[in-house]
Length: 114
Length: 112
Image (tube, rainbow over all chains, first blue to last red; front, side, top):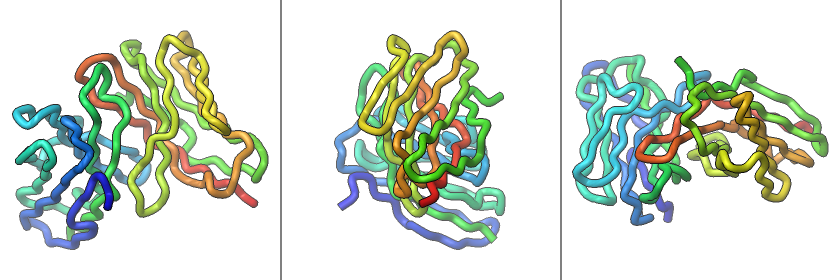
């Protein structure tokens, strides 16, 4: 089983719908992240959480919200999806430490907003 | 303003030759640098890293070079193999609670 699991792996939805992407991890890491990948734009940080009570906005948080339900669970919500949120979304974890260093990524959730 | 730049979107190399992927950064506070590899339909995976106290780190066929004065790092793959064909992301961080910043990636194609 994967250490970082994302559900769903693929989702097609319509403009205006609410969507939740879920992430769970078995690595025991405190830190969790949501990134978005778009062609030609690389990986951009949406939100991150360094522990259960800590939530921080990343580079592109507008239109997204997150919930850290437990150390092992970090979900990303799109309250009202729009077509330019069509992208590949990655959850990642990292251990506590001096650097937010080596990240362990899930396999990705491909979201299409029509 | 991009803090981590990978100016070559793609690179094509023959099998057995050297692949050199480049990365530039603008934030002088960055002191830890990483390379990730990503295959289609998979998440990125960590490949190799280097801290600013070093100018070279080697792991098998992969070597990362850091030139702090030029704010430049490069990943060398020798010899290149078809299985190395993937997208490579450069990332940077600094001590403390700052998440990694990624470049846009370079797609490497190793031709047999």
